[in-house]
Image (cartoon, rainbow, N blue to C red; front, side):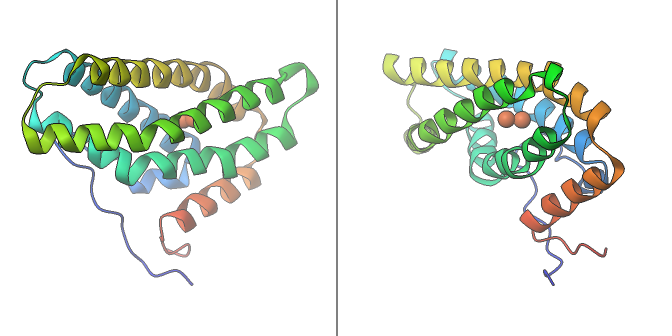
Length: 184
Ligand SMILES: [Fe+2]
Ligand SMILES: [Fe+2]
């Protein structure tokens, strides 16, 4: 059985997604998307600022280091397979999921570069150069696009198609990924 550990709290001034919400997994994912939208705004502020705010840098670093991969795994290993199983052909969900999987791969490839860049900015106190600004803005833009698709297509269809047992299975996977005791 997994030990009952709670992941580190999210950094900065933003509240973490309430872990009690994990029993309503689609709401938990929707909350993570709100969080991600704020992270994108912080990425844009960092790109636009001659003196990036340390709180923004620490918040985005914390998100990318602790939450980003977990959220992708919640979707790739939990939500998407359930949707492929439950959705009707007219939903055409397979095409949407292929697009999102490609977006996840692209984001995972960009993440190490973004982390190095943000850590450098945090330690140096410098402003980002043009190349860094372009990278930050492109990452934020790509993430926003991906969020729009998930919020507008994936989550509404999931709310209709997934069964109670599917949602329980989704919760179990999310708890397991976070090392949470499933019986709590
Ligand atoms: Fe997502
Ligand atoms: Fe996603």
